[in-house]
Length: 146
Image (cartoon, rainbow, N blue to C red; front, side, top):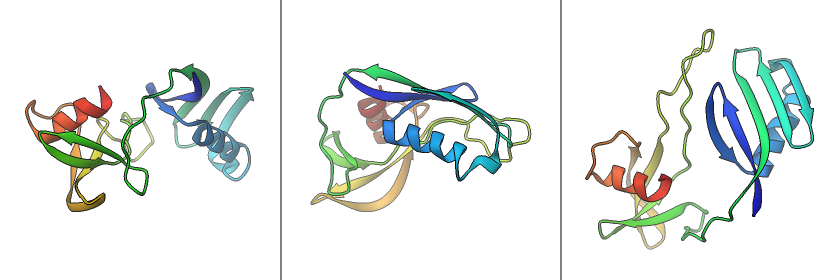
């Protein structure tokens, strides 16, 4: 079992590493405190309300240790789909429309690239869970995020 933070922003939940969760909590308490309307914190649990309307809850949880995955030299995941190898970028979580917040992301997505000799090759492509079944992007999404 490993510990991670369960990060909920305006109802959208993702898991982030301990380092990322602590960094957000520390930033809200110290350098970024001018952007924070209110914050409460106790061991392993932070509730942050930003002035731009976002409400973030960070809660430390234990999860099963993930299976080892193949990565490139920069630590990005490599998957094989339909006989080809692809490098998968970091998942960008959905961010719903919130009153007073100028930007929003309607659904989670990630970028992927073709792989040759352990390096990125070709154009940057996006994938998400609502892509048409049978496409390369949807097959990578299903392999990585389902």
